[in-house]
Image (cartoon, rainbow, N blue to C red; front, side):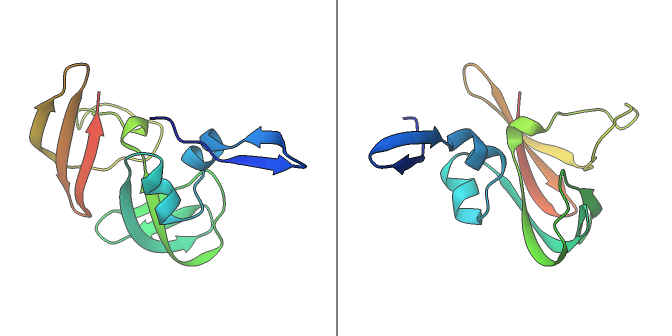
Length: 120
């Protein structure tokens, strides 16, 4: 099932925003409604969210300051060995489960911020 939300004007569709909501949800409900997400509670400080156990997690836009919840999509993560270089955020964890699902494998990781789900 594909979900989308459309903006309308006088009965005509102006734009379909399902991709925009998926990539940049404004609420936890919107993030969970349109797909899987790992949620991290923290404190926004400019272009990062400081998460207990992880430290600062950089974001693509400035969030101002204050308590917030960060949604991390499993499809935006990749597994890497500890010695591999990276150019983004890094969350260290231990794979605790591996579930083969036909066309993909889902991994559950234990991290200092709690369990994380990703797949490949």
